Amino acid sequence: GCGQPYYISECGIAVDVRYPDESPWRAFQAEMTAKDFVTSRAAGFYAYDYFQGIGAVGGGVEPYSFYMVQNQKIQSVAAAYSAAAQVVENVVETKWITPDRVARIAVFRKNDGNAVAAVWADKGYSMPLPGKFSVTDMMGNTIHPGKDGAFSLSSAPIYIWGTNYAELCSSMEKAHPEHAEFCTIMFRMKDRNTGSLKLLNNSRSRDMVLNVKITDGTQTYIRRIPVPRDSYGICSFPVSGSDIKTAVSCEGRKNVMTREFKVPAFIPIRQG
Image 1 (spheres, rainbow, N blue to C red):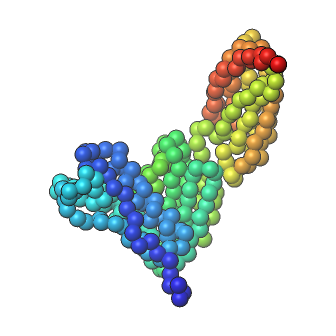
Image 2: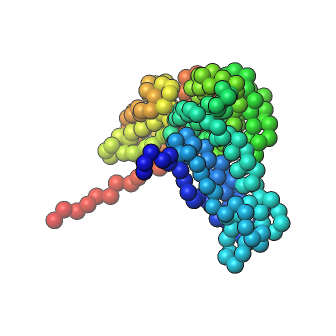
């Protein structure tokens, strides 16, 4: 109240102390701490207090630990905390970008005019980077793109550093993180003799034209389906009772998605 800024007074992630330092749970703790920092600042929170970053090195009497040190060893969450703190400090403006249902981008303007973006998605995503920027991983280490010029993304954020906020925002809006699976394919029966595919465009920024090959036993059907961004297309086709095999390609992309579906058996229901 009284015009005070919003802040998070206590937040943290506890890890079972019986797991080794390199466990997936310690990695998850590091990832979530970094993303908590980034999203909290992007949402406008003034401060974020991490609960019990330093404490009993052995975990105390509880079988879990919030601490960044365990058994005299620095944990990965400490490096992630440090790198994220450098991202969110002295921020005066933020832009939040959601290219699709998974990928997230937060761009921050610093009080000295410099800028930094945090980007994450799921394993299997990649993102070409328009423009020349320096890029670091969640721990603050410098990373470089692959041979195709794209950076691999995962649930762990990467940080893209620039000297101009407007330029970095523009680049991030053009970056288009993409997954090898560009759409979601769903199958259902419309009636005893007709099947239906629903093709959901996973991108919120790009329209797609999908070429669909459907194989039902010895019969093959070809469909070309325009699918607007953040929307879906539906195609129907005859079914014989054999398993359905689908191959979907997107015009302008090289990879092909394949799925197989079993046709459910219809069971007559007696009346009366």
